[in-house]
Length: 229
Image (cartoon, rainbow, N blue to C red; front, top):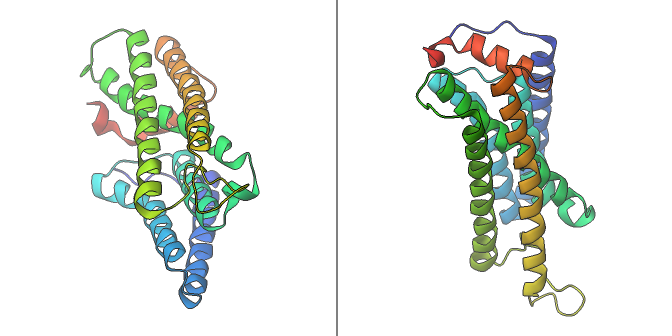
């Protein structure tokens, strides 16, 4: 893989990532000295996940457009660190909904990227409509796995990822209706995001053009020629 020529957005993405990593390192020291061990390990997880795109590119020699890298970094930072550690899920009622909508859309575009490579290299020979259905189903499946993960963490560690704590009566008890409502809203928002991504994928594969992803797909194709052999 040839080193991609740096653009202004590449530089902006790099410095935003460095700034976020700096804030996480500062948070690690604060949590360590305050002995907030759960938040300490969640912050370590955030650093690890944010570093994954870099190591993924190095190991597999696949260029990820800077827009994709920045989206991954911001989503992990907003969801794992700001949401769980800084408690944004409770401070802002719309935070969880926004992230689930975005995650459905973003995961759908990642699924589209994988299907795009397979389609262009003729490893998958089927209709564009069926590919868009696959993108939709893959995205929904990942959303289901995440909801199972939330339920498992709440059950095993006593967390409140499903937001099922009955704060009006007894904080130590769980109102299962709240958990069901939260899960269903998450499913609905994931479905909307997945639908948007699958429609965009359908339009692009059908017409070879969509204003939202033209530049990203072109740079991804140009910088990863071996994927399209």
